[in-house]
Image (tube, rainbow, N blue to C red; front, side):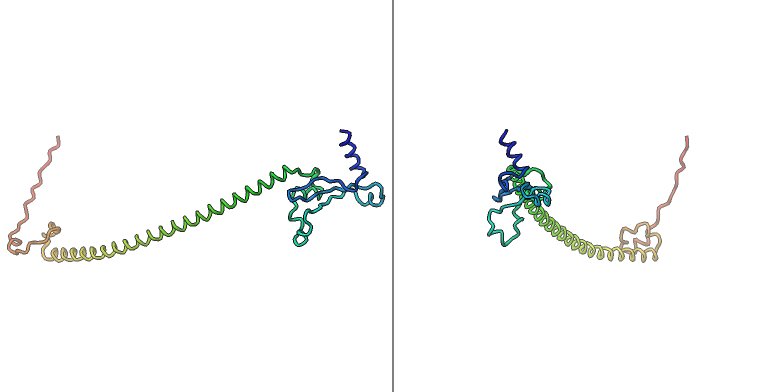
Length: 200
């Protein structure tokens, strides 16, 4: 307890070391905080808060690319003083696990979307095939209807010609008239005798 209190006082007053190790990240970068030095008066006036910086693990590798690509956002917020306490290793591991899980979920969603697109393309193709079959059957039905319409028109013309010859044949239009003309001349209509209905 006394040591931690002494360490805290040393850090705040800037006594002892020039910099204090704060922590590291999963890329093995080390983070330091340099307190406001009270020994140099000019430095103390210019700086109102401690200096925080990163000691990169592999400096030669990071010279080609931007170094802060490997710095986690938790440490970036600590470096910019938007976060008071430095992040822990457990917090960084949980964040990395979350990112891996997120990438897996995104790939699953992309695969599912591609599968759905292929299914919709297959469904569209089957619908197009069904429409083509229906249109072909409609064309054949239309051809049959036109032939049946022609037959019906011939039948109507035949009935008209019969009505013009004799109006009595209109009662028996569904049947063709017999070819024998003698039976046609002998034909007589039946008499019609209505019966009275008694109301009781």
